[in-house]
Length: 471
Image (cartoon, rainbow, N blue to C red; front, side):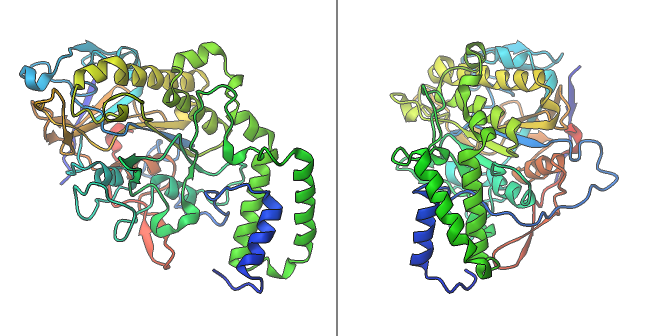
């Protein structure tokens, strides 16, 4: 049955010039660019304390569904059927698989799966700007100042993205894939002003998640970053690889220089990706049946969700799927529904989300992967309780909902409670830092695990608390 849980929480030196290195790099990679691939080093993590419970370390990977623009709490996880129409909105509720839990009526497929989902109904950023509230959600650190729209990555707001943290704690893993991938696009405001919090920040650029700008819904989909350039056939590639090997024999004395070591590691990973069958298989969506692809949906975003499942199967530790633009729709078809809120939700926002999200959970479960894959359903904030004059809802970071499933999370749980208008928390208040702490707890890293920045300063993974009530 439904369980509602509350807890009130008050360059190393090198004799070669930069030009020489660039020339060797060009010979070696033939124009291939993999700037986001990190180098391997030592892992920093803490052993599991005895009192942290069975959820500690249960997750091997994380899939983050990031619904840019902000999914509305009223029409999803926290409907208010008894509230006035101007707050309740134009949609009703439906019963879910969990007795006592009603969700928005535009989530019929997800409603059948709530026994696997834990809902957090009192998430708070207290930030009403996409850029800065999004920064807080992805890093666990409030932006300075709050509610700063069109903010960019600069000091003091350089906390690392959770994918960068993942790369740090998983460095040294032997895999053909980088530990963290973001697809199918970065998140940016109008004018392509990229939000802060999507990079390695104080940890340095080598920890940036690998950004794949792609469209998995296209026929003959390939990923440009790991495909051989069209002008470089396989034979020429082999010759260039041989040339690089010959040059490499004469550079042994340089191997310990940091810049060179980093170059070698990135080069090897590039070759692994180009030639490795595991990489080719992971990105080959044609291996999926038409029925499976249809179950997710054929949009760019939905096929990216399917690709995320394939990537975690292949060994990627964290994949973030960002919502895609929908051409011809208000505000590029994002969840930022300042106008025509009900229309946009009903026509494509909710159906696309409901279909792909439920397909992912079902697919992971059927493959025996849900128990070891943590799926986070999030956005940068929610929406205002009241509709505006344009039949839309505006930004609201004072109380909204997120959902977690798999990877050590108990299903059929609602943690936290909002007021009668889903405007402010009544109990069980949660901040993004608590979400970050909980995610990495499930991955086997306690919140006080130290990350050392480029200046040698230690930082904990999170200053939040683990939400044990849902584990």
